[in-house]
Structure formats: structure tokens, C-alpha cells
Amino acid sequence: MTQIDLRAGENLGEEYRAKNPFGRIPVLELDDGSYLSESQAICRFIEGLHPDPNFFGTTSEEQAIIEMWSRRVELNVMMPVAQAFRNITGFFKDREKVVPEWGEVAAQAAKAAVAIINDHLADNEYLTGNRYTIADMILAITLNFAKNVGQDLLAAERIARWHAQVAARPAFA
Ligand SMILES: N[C@@H](CCC(=O)N[C@@H](CS)C(=O)NCC(=O)O)C(=O)O
Image (cartoon, rainbow, N blue to C red):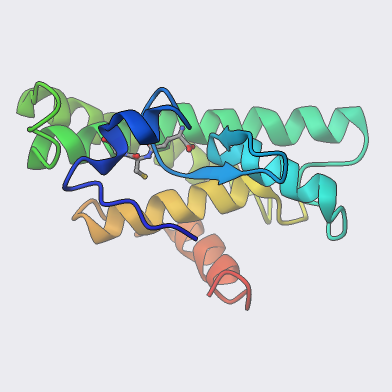
């Protein structure tokens, strides 16, 4: 594993951008020397190598439902949380324009999305029903990150119940 120093902008240099032109971590180097980025694509590749246990679905219907939830979480929770973090703290002000007001709007958007998910969890043990999937992983990691950067989105009752269940999984810990 190679650590990339984000604060120093190592991910923005020519060497790293040859691996991922978008300059984001993580990147997985494959045996043939090619590179894969985007966390979900990397996870899907790993599941292909180790299909059991399954986290991306088996039937096409189940795969579609899991992807629906993964996309809902990434687009409606992860992106706003990241935008709030970046624009409120100015953490990456050396490389992008920071708009604090936009950060506040994004933080509210993340809260609103989590409230919708909290309602959904009234009738569902996990995001896609009765089993843990990649969609739950993405949401749990997003909410842990949010908490670490001062956006606590874990308080709602069903979110708290669901998060405790996920956090109790040995692999998650
Ligand atoms: N959609 C991408 C997001 C990757 C991403 O935004 N990574 C952040 C850190 S978690 C990053 O590399 N930030 C450095 C920068 O923006 O310069 C994924 O799922 O892998």
C-alpha cells in the first residue's frame, strides 16, 4: 500500500494523475499494471475475486436495488457531506474556490437526505431490506466521516439503531 499525502497535494502531481486523471484517492493497481479508481468500482472488482459473502446483489433485481441505494447515498449524502466539509473548513483551499455559504447549504442537504433514510429504516433493517450490502457500507463510512469533521448525522433514532448494528460487525470495526 502506498500512502498519498493529500495535504501536500501529492495526488495532484503528474505521477499520480497518470493513475487517476481526477487526482483522487483511492487507486488500486492491478496485476497487469493498469489502475482502477472510484471506491465502488474497486469494491465491485474485489467482490468479483471473492464473491462470497455477496455485497452487490445476486439477481438483477437485487443488484439494481442495491445500486439504487448506493447512488442515493453517494449523491444525496456523501457528496453534500464532502462539499460541506470542503467549503466550510476550506481544507482544500489551496486547490479550489471555497464558498462557505455553499458549504452550509450542502450540510442542510445532507441532513435532509439522512432524515429521508431515517424514515426508510422504519420498515427496513438495512437500506435494501434484511441484509447488509455495499450501500450500508457507503452510508456508514460517510456518516463516520461526517461525525469526525463535525457534522453529526447519527442522532435520529433509526439511523442510530442501524449504525449500531453496522458498527458491531467485526469487519466494520
Ligand atoms: N468518488 C470517489 C471520491 C474520491 C475522493 O473524493 N477522494 C478524496 C479523499 S476521500 C480525495 O482524494 N481528495 C483529494 C482532493 O480533492 O484533492 C471515490 O469513491 O473513490
